[in-house]
Image (cartoon, rainbow, N blue to C red; front, side, top):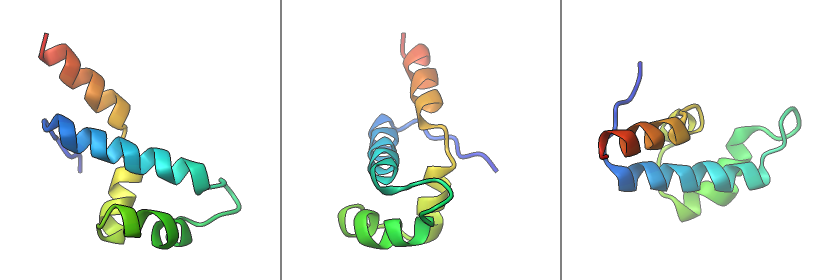
Length: 71
């Protein structure tokens, strides 16, 4: 299931979530759950399911597509 979002601010918010996650996540060592609980949830209120959708989303691609549409 793909999420089609046209709201630029929402995409920028999700990009912040992804960037904050990358600061604390070490592939193969750190699970996402503690990163979510300690760093993401207090700053970006959301469910863990929503967090995982955002992490697996290509926000940069969606932003680029939106920029191309708005030209």
